[in-house]
Image (cartoon, rainbow over all chains, first blue to last red):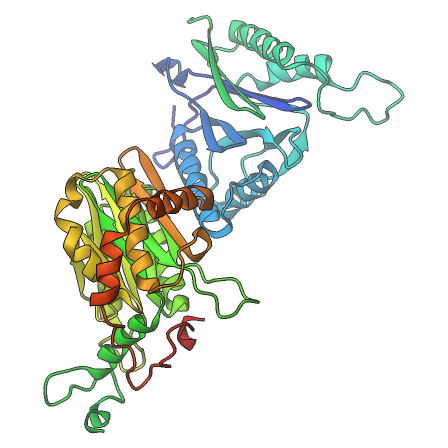
Length: 221
Length: 272
């Protein structure tokens, strides 16, 4: 669909979601890789485990995403050599932001959602734009299905009390299984209407005992 | 004395065809506290003696991880060793990034040796004053190399460097031929024996030494003190045949040169 000979990006579609809980974090992404109206593969992971307690999900241009994940993994190795410990989620959050802004004038076409546990063991989600603007939130979604999913998450997870103004994204009081069920529901809904989302859903849960992976079949059309 | 005429510059040859500055750099390695390395077909072990400058100070780090599959033990100017370790880590990361596979140990030591050689051929530089024992595992098995300040490197089945390393080398010389088939536990025990040799009478405890291992299914890591103490306790229970012979046979190694402090229990000033 590139009209110019020098268009250096491509959107491979897909959607990512992350939800922060009291002592866990759920990060999920579909596994469909598309270009235009075609599917390249139904089985491609958009999720990268960067550290013990940090998981990154990115949608957008796979070439840039692969390079970005590699870059961060190498930087994490350097960090471990220098500091003798794994990077925390907030630290990785800052690193990702700086890495993205470093290429402000030729950006990574990657829409990222970083999830993990912070230094106190609480769930931690950071959401980014393509050039590194980031914010810690209680939940987020990026990618082609994000506009379909975000309103649903707002409805379910945004702070319910009207007395808290402005309504803040708090870490959700939902349990781990409830959060995973919510993620499955929103992806099933997004799959219905977004052509770039579907095939399979990869769900990663980070908690004190480590990282756990789960898969769910989605509609293939 | 005689050699002082040609030893000011690393870029000056002596009439006998020697570069004295490089040789002096190798002396610096002998002044550092001991480090040992040994390997089997599938594992490589590094050990080092932890000597602190005084009771008030903590000891210097002598074992560094370069990557999952490679680590180094240093002896000599620890500052130089730290800088070279950083170089090794960078090289490993760069290779993994581009080729998505671990850097073969033989290539890593060549890059390190080339870096050392540069400093022997520039008038504004000085040779690195540190010897490195590089232990790693790659597709061709476990390897142990020794990198000199001169830019030379050699592969070994087992080796020891630093002060009083001759005692450890004598011990290793007797045992190395079976190392290929040694189990990982036996390798660690022999490494501890070798370290014990360099202590010459002082009691070996887990606080006095550091041991690291890398092997098949095992990333490079430093073994925790408790496990080391258990190995030491197990060793002391068995008859100490090899050590008694070694203690009698190995005289204190010749480090009482012009630069040497002569003190056998204090580390050389450059090791601080």
